[in-house]
Image (cartoon, rainbow, N blue to C red; front, side, top):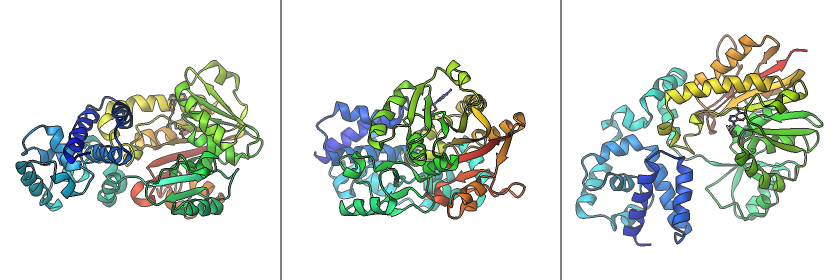
Length: 425
Ligand SMILES: C[S@@+](CC[C@H](N)C(=O)[O-])C[C@H]1O[C@@H](n2cnc3c(N)ncnc32)[C@H](O)[C@@H]1O
């Protein structure tokens, strides 16, 4: 495709994602369905350009102010993910001069918001938590996430899977913390790879793998994945249970649970029972009260720990959404906890970096549920042989290691939180 046509398409896609009325990945998929003639490289350029604009929206809007022509075109030019000489073939003379002037702007000349590209309401809660590391965190949130795989240990050992990928010219290394993970170099297509189609590997961030590991689900147990969605963690739990016992995958979205089905078929698991529920107090949940050994609550959240993958979330979420979500998170956690037997383990997790969705929910739950004893997550991870477990957890002097707290700039994972309890006997 001629650079001019590709830039026009990028401008159209940037305009659509910036409406922020749907998740960016949905908008991009719809755009590609409407433009079936686009080849794989053109699709990659367009998607990466749209994501680059979402990542650096504040900077690009600032730089685009003095330019001429449609604003979305200027934003698409700034974010265009192709060599400059290719892009310049699509530009007018004034556009080339404007772009050269933009390229000459030094970071030190910019205001903080044009460097971190975060909405104002998010800056303070992040600074309050990471202090001097704020710039490193903000920079890490502007990068794309690496591609992590979880090896399905029912089918393959990690070193064998690594060697199989290497034979297919896919370079990977073992993830530093998760015993099941491989971190792949680049973004190779996996869909047709034998290791993928026969369920030996699944795509899953290392942080998500650690959340599933923390539940420590064992052979023959009754386990619930309360907010199972498309089942990323369900699959990890089912494999940890060696395909024995019963693993319920609950979710209010039947549509998301449907997406679990092909993954389950590949995985070889037969111990998983997907159940669509109406809400967290569904009758079916009430009937199973006190029957479970382990319950994972991977709660719906702002997803602000996943900005490397979903940069649109920082513009699509608001403090009001946080307030609505925290009420939901409390209700779901309280309801899911009733499923546990005495002695059973509860894990509450999010992919948010906001204390309101994390520590505040865990502390309120502990205060209201004297029958649940908080467990120290660093100790649990140590007992599961996770290297450097304390460094993955909160360092609070009063309760060191109480909660899992993963950060992209420290751990190379998405941002995750987890708290754990044992139901007293
Ligand atoms: C963070 S996502 C789950 C991701 C999934 N565990 C995974 O690893 O792929 C949260 C899920 O909670 C579900 N959810 C929202 N409200 C719920 C409720 N009241 N009860 C159960 N699930 C709920 C959403 O449909 C969504 O799939």
